[in-house]
Length: 450
Image 1 (spheres, rainbow, N blue to C red):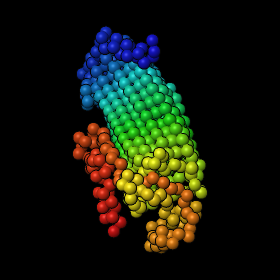
Image 2: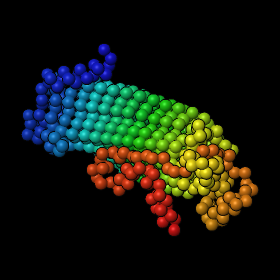
Image 3: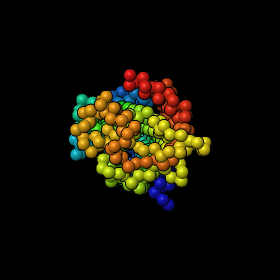
Image 4: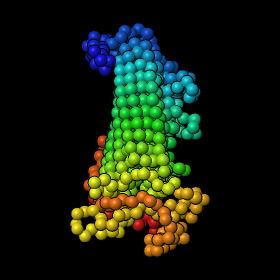
């Protein structure tokens, strides 16, 4: 019997045979710790409204649930809840006031076991939110996590921190004001979907973590939407990375990663849309990259990657190359990408431009190799240089070409997380097909630059 099935059977057995212990200001149990001490594996501890002081440990398989008004207030050191038994459920609680030691993993919920469900909790005034420590086959869903905004970014923990763990599902959580929204280190085969990540350093941060899927998430108003570092086979689909700005900000950052796939994502209104350093053998297709200061920043160490059927719309600059060239392919089998500033023609009417598109802004090319020139970026002088170079080419510039540029945007629909739809989010405009969106973005950009 595999371990995942064993966890399911354990949970089913607990539901069938366990008893319920009631915790409330008027008893029969006055605190969750008191009920835990009197419980057996498979029991449910139901916590009524009120504030309960102190940290607790789930050292046997239990369901710990609140009525929506139950607050577990930690003692200000360590983790408010520590889970050491497999097959526990924690739901419907407000959890607050953890310790402040990063080295000790002080958390709202610290999980050191497997097969647990942590759902529909609110965590606040915590260092780390939910920390999975060598913990497999868990589901963390529907939680709201808010960190300590009074601390500097380097002093905060992550909202959901996963270390040396496998086969976890992180779904439908809202995370803000921590360091990184979801942080992976040596975490494998996990499914991350439908989360809302904002007011952070990185919405998502992978370190040495392979074979993970990140889908239908919304990451915005961060320093960077996502950072993928030293990882393999990371798949991004249908995510939204918008308005991630600040010093050295990116929609998605790839560093020393291999065999990644990014498709059907929206990467818009960031400092740099896609950053690539030592990204290798990866595929980026069917993405919308729009309204960024620089669509792509690539080092010459990026090689063997393919961009195809993407929509590059009204970015201030299409590319910044650090070095000579990247070894990136911009088309395959006669199909490339859509570039809103392509001014070529299609005489045979096959939807592909007859003239290759040279992917460059001359001033960006110079600035990429001479950073001090950035002081003049987008100045009248730089724009005059770009126009003159188009008319009378004298600077060799970028060696990146899309040999099969598309004449029309590639159809793409973005599915927002359900919570955003219910909130009537201002981002609902992203749900329309990109073929209709491209012209609107162009108008927005022109208005923004006046």
